[in-house]
Length: 321
Image (cartoon, rainbow, N blue to C red; front, side, top):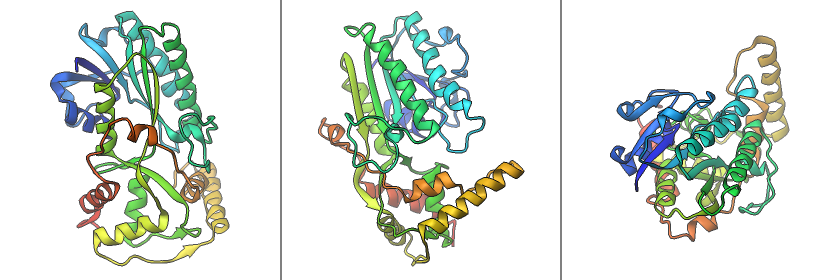
């Protein structure tokens, strides 16, 4: 691998990716400092148009991880300013520096909710502004690649929700509720969830760097097997060696509660951990076909059960009793 520019690698996945590829082979451009790799980090916001000076002459490939991804972002325009306009700015800077290869970390959110195991050919139908902005960014990237398809290389990785140690995202919050004993199942718990351990996501990005080819490549990434919510709770019980509550609410009741918190948010301006969007996501089946990625020669370094076990024990094994 030649020198790689990582854009947005100060966070969760990016830090693990630098661990794998080695900081001597890359550098980071991010609006936030990196707790672990600040010595190779340049502070810059991709919403700014002029990114020319940050790419070095030896840069061969850009990995674009930067994204506005939380489901409670305000104002909504931030999704599009970062995920779409920011992508354009990165591509403009690449063109100015003669860089022809990019790996874009997209999301299975482009498919929408409750779709039947969509593969890479499935028509996008994003449900959220995050998914809509990621799909728009993908179209910008594809237009860029098609203008010079003989020399430009574009890999789009549509990752499912990632989890792991030191992450504070939605899966972390869910696992924290389960581990705390305050978890309340909404619905029957039979809906299945595609998930991905951060160690495997970072390893798959590295694999794509090592197997880069000219042209367009789109790959879903999830770890297997897809667990039901009931199975996820059982995994938590096993990892934490404790029996967890089995209380349940009907879906309609949970959604009504989420809508009430939405109303409180509008009235008070305060953000709450429960929203109608999160209830819908929790109760939705979100399964995705990643057979193309898993038949490419990539071997995940961890099983899904190992990833969950490592995360639960690291984050909650001794902290919540």
